[in-house]
Length: 125
Image (cartoon, rainbow, N blue to C red):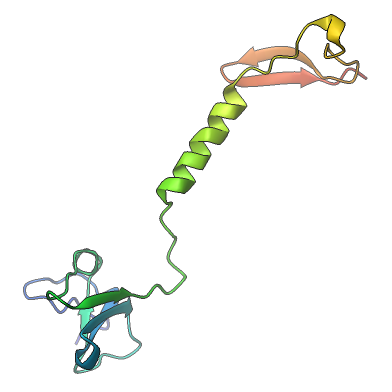
């Protein structure tokens, strides 16, 4: 007998990563992390089959995460990251010299540039 538990789906030999349990009284399918021990009324599923799992009409699917798997970034996370990159790439307008917004003496001086990277030198040196 193999020490690795396999997917319960017919003709699938991939290793199991999740355990499916049905709660018939609540019409609920619970998909969680792989159980410690193989139970006779639970189904072990591979990653592909656990992602594609659907329940019968009128049933609810509850997906429990174990917390150790990396979370997929949401659309909001990706949009916030894109906005931060755009903001960082936008040239900052310092305004005319006469308005008090000119280059301060403590601002670093750009020495060289390569692509999006800049080499800055402190005005003190």
